[in-house]
Picture 1 (cartoon, rainbow, N blue to C red):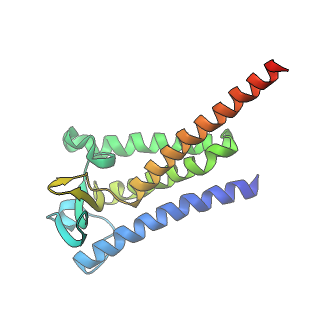
Picture 2: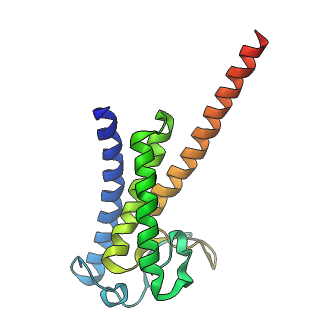
Picture 3: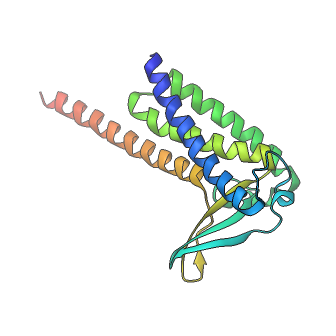
Length: 181
């Protein structure tokens, strides 16, 4: 049990560390330091393009006051507090489920989701918004900018759904083979 907890805590901490280090590097390159707290637009007032990597990918810097992939961006001034409280409850629920009830095939995806959510929560508490910097595009169409934490959340959700589907399928196949006997 202790090894299980340590394994999934390592995944959570790894996701948080990758996310916060990547954002810290960007903030350092822009500001010359790593601000610990402050209103997002006081820290870096204007979003801008930092580097064109290739024809379909840029490194940009933008603040996201909404949820993942800029959702809920239009909640106004109450948005950061509402999102912080909601995110805290969601993280608590998922973490409880992860460590108390999750099946083995659910644990890695849930750990990725928790780590990504905490990574974005840290930004939201520090700045009132999340740093987004990965910009994929086709011509003039740009997918909403995102970050490492968003990637962890999306990968975790995809793995969770895939694992759930495969586990359900194994269960149905098992029931079917037992009926045939």
